Length: 166
Image 1 (cartoon, rainbow, N blue to C red):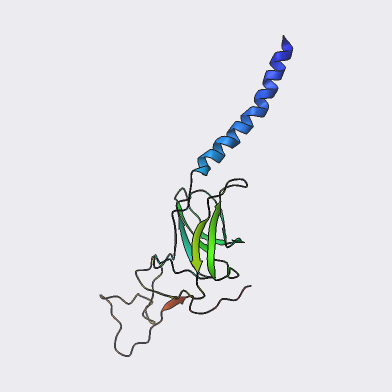
Image 2: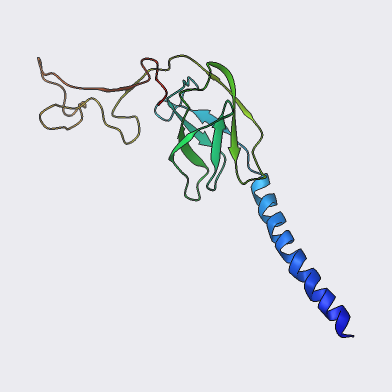
C-alpha cells in the first residue's frame, strides 16, 4: 500500500507547480491595452524617440513597438498605466504595441500610427514637468506670476526633429 502513496505524492509534486503557473497565466491573460497616447498631451500623435503612456495593463511588463523593445520610463506599481520611450529605430507608419506579461503571455496587438515628428511644447499643465520658467527664480510662468516685459525665459520641448539611434 505504500506504493500508491508514493505515486500520489509524486503526482502532487508535479501537478501543483503546473496549476500555480496556469493560475498566474490566466490572471494576466485577461489584461488588454486600452490606450496608447502622448503622456503630456493625451494625443495619439506619436513619433519614434518620444514617450507613450500605455493604459490597461498592470504588472512588470516589457513592451515592443513595431517589433522593437521599448525602454520603460515609468513602470506601474499595481496600477494599469505606465510610460515607455518609443524606440528611435521604429519605422514611421502603422505599428503594433504589444505588452509582454510573461515569457508566454502577451496582450493582443494594439494598433498605433507613428509619425516622423510629434512636437510637444511642454506647459505647466503637462503633468509634473514645469515649463516655461522664470530664468532667475526657476518658478513657473503662470497667470499669478506672469513673464515681465523683456524677460527671457526658457521652455521645454520634445520631438521637434529626428532622433538618432545610439
